[in-house]
Amino acid sequence: MRHFSRRSVLGGLAGAASITALARPAIAQAAPLKIGLMLPFSGTYAALGENIAAAFELCLKEQDGKLGGRAVTIVRVDDESDPAKAPANVNRLIGRDNVDVMVGTVHSGVVMAMVQAAREKEVPLIIPNAGNVAATRNLCSPYVFRSSFSNWQPAYGMGKALAAKGVKKAAWVTWDYAAGKESGDGFRDGLKAGGAELTQVLTLPFPETNFQPLLAKIPGLGVDAVGSFFAGGGAIQFVKDYAAAGLRDKVPLCGSGFLTEGVLKAQGAAAEGIQTALHYGDGLNNPKNTAFRTLFKATTSRDADVYAVQGYDAAQMLAAGLAATKGDAAAIKPLAAAIRAARIDSPRGTFTLSPSHNPVQTIWLREVRGSENKVIGAAVEALVDPGTGCKMPA
Ligand code: PHB
Image (tube, rainbow, N blue to C red; front, top):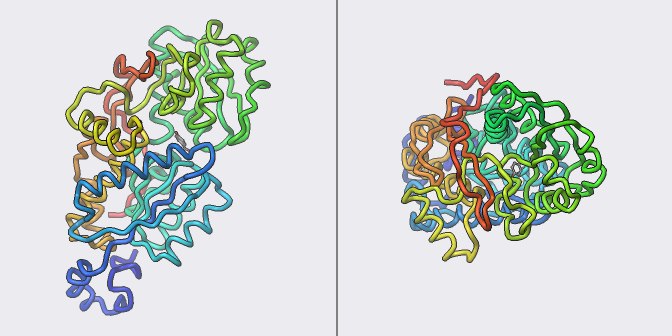
């Protein structure tokens, strides 16, 4: 691996290693640091992308628009949560816009193109949502960091909490793509850890919302509960349809916390009482959370949610890394070392990264009460993704 990539702020001088090392700091301060924000600003995950971007920029503003002493410019790309368009969108950011750092995205399929580019083109990437486990397992890299979660984490917490309540058999309902499948794996592992069993997985293609054929099967499954992964617009529809089908009193619905995150107003009474598990929740009582929620509301007129928290923390992680390199995003060794060593003062509670660069964090059990995902306990404290297959270069 090259220590100083072609993306060094020295660009054209990259061949001359000794000159590079000497001249970098001065030049680093002269040119603005370019950050490519690749997120969905349209489609079923649009609201998620908007909150991530808004909170990322909020954190930047708190730092006077600078990271590591360098002014920051932001380039936005709407990835539409479309994996087919992802390689072209990433190429645009790196090849045309020449960004120094990438931040993105929401969708587990789309993020794979970003991870691949980060590794091959040596451009640091902070993932502010997408939970694709590969990013911090077999494809882990010094260039790739996550401020969010692995798909496995919240669902593992949900499975474990459900088993602890005495559920013996449960099914998983989700979209047929990496996030749905991997969170199903977490749910299965959590159930198993508590002596319960995942008996069926029902899927439909992303981002379809014709849930009726799946809902029709649920009464015949013979399960005590249904767990699910849906998010954004799809989660609104699923929770409403589940209630309208009269299933709520027959087979309780639960899930990864995204099911009811940022969507409660739209779901209304259909969501009342649903339990979910997530690394964030309403009413987490710490000063950082209180200040963040107040500021986010004042700036955007929206309530903060987990997506906003992850966007804010992506900027905090970058700030920690770039402070150590005086704004040089190409100095990957000290940058990565600083992010790894950081304790991120997050609204979710302070967290650190695992050796494969995924947050080690408590998964909270929440219950929908009115307009809140009220935290009712810890499903699993300080949960570490297993990081299976990660061979992080020194
Ligand atoms: C994902 O695709 O990884 C994903 C998308 C939306 C969420 C969570 C995970 O809310």
